[in-house]
Length: 148
Length: 148
Length: 148
Length: 148
Image 1: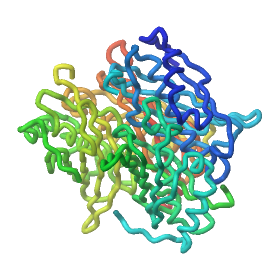
Image 2 (image 1 turned 180 degrees about the horizontal axis):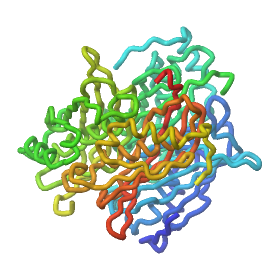
Image 3 (image 1 turned 90 degrees about the vertical axis):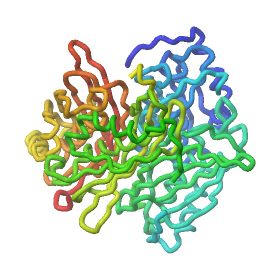
Image 4 (image 1 turned 90 degrees about the horizontal axis):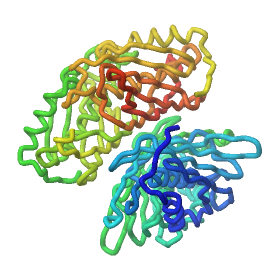
C-alpha cells in the first residue's frame, strides 16, 4: 500500500463532515471506521432492510459503501475547497455478501490533479470468517467546490 | 432493442416475487415499473435519505437500482428454478443524478446458458427535463436455485 | 445515435493524420473506414498473425481497434490543439471474434470539456453473417497538445 | 499474493503451448516471462510498430498483453482438457506506457469452477525507472476443450 500526503491539513474533519451530509449513509446505517490520507474504511451492520432476495447484503448496498469508501479515499487527499465526483467504477462480486457486517476499504492507487484512481475491496465478517465479497476500481474527479 | 422470449411463462410474477423479497428495494422505496422479457425498469422517488453530500441521489443508490434492473432483465428470461447473481458491472456516472425521480432501465444485450450480458441506463427526471445520469454494462450468472 | 458538432472544422483530416501516426494500426493492418463527428469506424481483415490460440481474432486485437475507434470518436469533437488519452475502458467479449474481418464502431455517448464518454461495439463478418463480438464503454481525456 | 494449486501437473507446458499458438503474441513480439500457478508475466520490447500517435506503446497493445497474462494466469489453474475465454475486462491507463519494455503481470484473485477473476498490472521500464502504466480486472471462463 502506498503512503500519501494530503493537501488538506484537516482532511479527516473534511471527510467526516462530508460523510455526515450523505443522507444515503445514514439510511443504510453506514459508519466511517478509518480515515487516513488516501485510505478510508466504512463499516455496515446487517439488517434485513439491506438484503437481496436470498437474505445476503444486496450487491447495490455493498457497492454503495465501496463507492463511498473509494470516493472519500480520493477526497482525503484534495486541497480544501474541492469536491469529489465518481466518474465511473467497476466491481466484481466475488462471493455472496453473507455476514453480520461488511467493511468497505477504499484506497488511492494513483492520485492526480484532475483524476484520482482508487481500488476498493469489501469484506464480509461472519463469526470468525472473513470473506472478500467484492473488489473493484473507481475513477474519481476533483472539482473546485464553487463548480459543484 | 432486441426482442427476447422467456423460458418462464410466469416470468413477470417471478420477477415481482423476487423483487418483493429484496429488503433493499423496500428500504430505498424503489418500484418495479416495467417487466418485459429481457427488459425491466425500476423507478425511485427522491428523498433526502437517498442523497450524497450535495443533495443529489447518491451514486451508489443510482447504481443499486441499475444493478437490480439489469439483474431482473436477465432473470426474466431464465427457466423456472434458477436464480440470478451479479458477477460484475461497470457504471459511468454521466451527470449529477438531480431530479424528483430516477428511472433505471435494464436490458439484455446477449442472453446465454450460464452468462447473460446486460446494458443499463438511469434517467433523472426534473420537471420537464430528462437527463441520462448513468449507464453501464453488467454480467449476470444463471444459477440452479438449489445451489443458491 | 446522437448528432454532435465538432469544434474542429478539419476534424476528419486531424483524425486521419493522428491515425497514420499510430504504428500499432499499421502493424495490425487496420483501416479508418468512417470518420464523422463523434463517430469513427475502423476495419481489420483477418490473418493468422492476429489470432488467439483457437484461430479467432485475439481479444486484445479486437480491443485495440475498439479503443482506437472510441478514442478517435472523442478526438473528432475536440478543438484543434488537443490530444486524446484513454483514461479507462471496459469491454465484454460476447462471442468468438470469428470472421474474415472486424468492424469496430466508436461513438460518443457524452461529450465534455475534460472527459468524453464513448460506447463501442465490434462486429465480426463471416460470409453473410454478422456477429457482435465485443462491446464496451470508454472514458477519454482531452489534453492540450503542449502537455501531451 | 495468494498461493494456488493447479489442477494440471503440466500447467507450465500447457500455458507455453497455448501461448505459442497465439499468432498475435508473435506479431507483437511478446514473450512469456514467468509461469506459476495463478500467476503469469508477459514481456514486450518497444518498437515503433507498437506505438500510438505520440510514440508510446499503444494502449491496445498494453492491454493485449495484460489480457493474455490474466487469461494464462487463470488457465494455469485449470484441469487438462479445458480452454480459457475472456468474458470481460476493465483497464485503467494510469500513465503513458513510455519505456523500452513492458511487463504485464496477471494474477488470479478468485478461482472458480466456471469463472476465475484475475487482476493485472502493466509496468513500463525506462532506464532505471519503473512506472505502473495500467491495471485492471478480468473475468475468465473455463470451457471444456471439446466445446471450444
